[in-house]
Image (cartoon, rainbow, N blue to C red):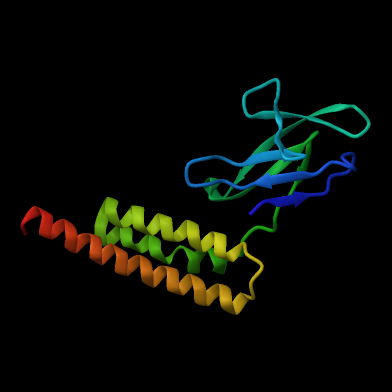
Length: 157
């Protein structure tokens, strides 16, 4: 799911943010194409409607787990509204699997957490978001237990 941006000075251009994936960072798209690399590492060069070039760069949010803010020509732009604290807590419950299963629990918990944050970013009703994220969290526990059982059988314990 891409997030559209309406920035002053970029009228007539379609600016979108492709959020962070499991194995890729955020991407700024201009008219469907990736933004050009800027003069320094981590910077992007954007062409305004008046022809002037400006520099943009990402500003990570919440340890890089949320959709980052974008700084364009020195001005902060919120791509999306940050998640509320209770959405972080509820969506992060699967991370408790780390305490039950170490690395395996951490992997399953983190995948479920990422899915939960994407659900909270959806346009569904708040009640549906909480029901879906509860389902993802329960499913994460079930998957974790299945994996532990399979590893236990494979190791002959």
